[in-house]
Amino acid sequence: MKSEVQDQADIRVIRLSGKITIGAGDVKLRELIRDALESGRTKILLDLAKVSAMDSSGIGEMVAAYTTVRKRDGQLKLLNLSPKINDILQVTQLITVFDVFDDSEEAMASFA
Amino acid sequence: MVCPTPLTASLVLSSRFENIEVAERVLRDLCERAGCDEDDLRPLLSALWEALANAIRHGNRRQVDRRVLVEYSVDGNAAVITVHDQGEGFDPEAVPDPTAPENLLRPSGRGIFFMKQLMDRVEFTSPPAGGTCVTMRRRLNATARSTDNEE
Image (cartoon, rainbow over the protein chains, first blue to last red):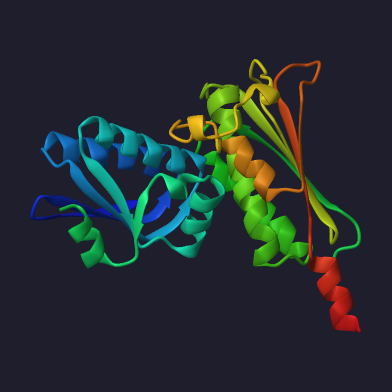
């Protein structure tokens, strides 16, 4: 998995690409969230447009990221789900947990 | 072309996550030779991934010297995949439903759920020799497509 991090105002935008799967992407995602929180960034937008695959460990890591950020009174939201990732969130019912956006401006404005 | 007799293979892997990709390559090769297309292959690959991740992490507890046996049988009708670890065994009925509201925020426990979503049949057994054995079966569309083309 690769990532690109950009801070826009007080929002950390993390663009992920590749696989978020056991033993690789899941660990990297955990590190990215930890880095954000250690930098004082508690508003996090994960852009998943270029994520090609996600297994149950990757999903679990996203859930862990969500709860970790929430415990710090922060917010973690998702942007640009591919049909495949959207299907995974639907079938696991996690679509009811995450705030999901297709439009980055709308997503950024939602943190206000 | 649809393969009339099952194509079979077996693999013995050490408990490393990177070996999952080795097992995927074997499955992909068998399926291509049996006439499967990407629609057939995709759920099989995902289910195999989840079964192996479980075997390595929960079954063999990432102890590299513990082995995972993978057996494949693929023909034009169905694919059957068996994954056998050397762990302590577990009760699959005791795994909570990850879609229940009280479990939604649990960070783990979705692997078996995914396997059941992806495959037609998923069965766990505890062989006398130890470990956990999961057998997964999924019907393939290759035969139907081949018949359609001949008509």
